[in-house]
Image (cartoon, rainbow, N blue to C red; front, side):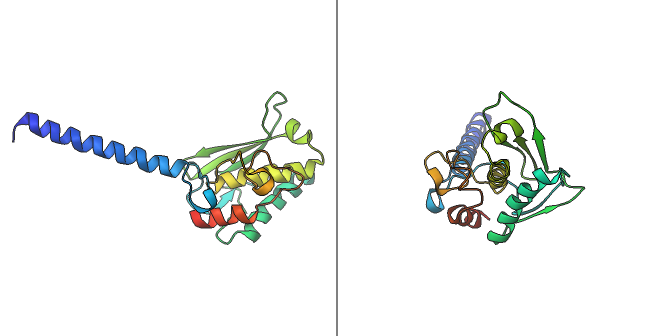
Length: 181
């Protein structure tokens, strides 16, 4: 075999591998699976993980703990525990011009940073329910659930949900986490 044909053969294999990778990545990013689920890259590698206890006052910790407990008690594979040596973090931020209540920033399936935007969360009283809904939604991202735009109040992962009504994972969210893990 000549050097030129070896090069063509190697290039062809490389193109096939790249195409296979792109197709696989696209199916993971937004795979319509159970109930038209939308999964995202950046969730934790396991549904059982540790988060550094933020140590806030009870005004913050009560709703944050309620969000964590809702996932832990309703989702079979889910276990979110507090640990002082955990890499995953939850932080309160003060970004009055931001348009978001919470943000999930992944770190390659092994950690994350959840930012809870106090001015935006406070704009939807009562604060505790808004914070609980926002935190539970961001925990949903840690379980690889993506945002929905078309489900209204039927999913915690919907950005258009009524935060006073949907503040815990719904049956739809639980099925999708269970299917993923």
